[in-house]
Amino acid sequence: MASRVRAFGAFAYDFVIGDDWWVAAGVVAGLAVTYALSHAAITAWWLIPALLIVLLPLTLWRAVRKH
Amino acid sequence: MSSGALFIAVFLACAVEGVEATTIVLAAGTARDWRSATVGMLTALALLAAITAALGPAVAALPLSALRLFVGALLLIFGLQWLRKAILRASGHKALHDEDAIYREQVAAAAAEPARRAGLVPDWYGFTLSFKGVLLEGLEVVFIALTFGGNAHDIPLAAVAAVSAVVLVGLAGLAIRAPLARVPENTLKFVVGVMLTAFGTFWGAEGAGATWPGSDAALLAIVPAIAVFALVMVVLMRRLRTGSPDQGGAVAAAVAEVS
Image (cartoon, rainbow over all chains, first blue to last red; front, top):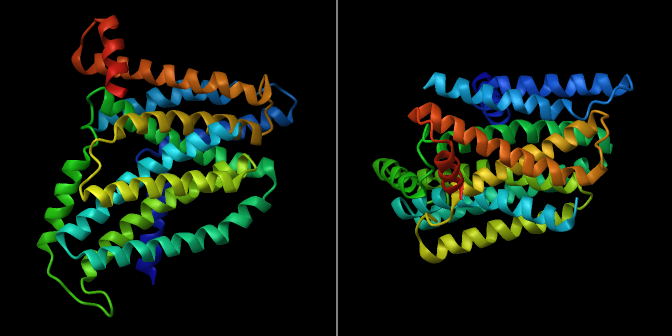
């Protein structure tokens, strides 16, 4: 039973998080900050596009460095 | 989001998943046993239908802002993963996705395993290979159709797009009984990566409470902006690999590589 739970956990991690956990962590952090800014009545639509400009090169650099 | 954009986004994403699932089923059928591979595929499709029937109403019942935040986050994560792989492939840092090579590897691995009957299934290995391949690729199809459809308030249209893509690709694969190597899969993955990232950006920010300038029309700027940024990344990654300062040639080569 424990091994099946572990196998499902590994599958779920691979399905959702994938090869680079920085992407998932960055997206969650970006959306959390967007939520906080929006609910403080501060314009926040620009934050996720700005995050992409940082996150995509970062994950590419990590992939190249790994190989 | 227009109905056309919804249909195209779901159709392309599901076609890519369909090509990968078809390759696995064909390998299982060719190297092992067609009956077992077919039963495995049908069992996985039945399970996927049950998952869709269970999750569909739940997705439709979620508050729109919560749905958009959750789905936006997942689409952003998936989209960036797809884009990363597509950029690495287009810039030469990763081998291009080759359905012929994958098919040959699957057939060789399947042929090496001994046959074992289990109940009504003549070959258990062929069944599980086909079942797992269709289920794993199908889960992504179900996720894409439900989330895109739920956000656009049109799950039926998204379902039609998903089923059309899967049926079209499946029939093509069965008709030629060979991997669909001529489908421009690397280009499709680049396009789908751009679309998943763009819709994830739009819905995620909106679900978190942000308001886009121009409302839905903002997507008309987000999609091309992400596509151009991804192409620039291809150019930069290619230069990183080759050390070539020829920007004009690199841009042309990057566009050619993903198209």
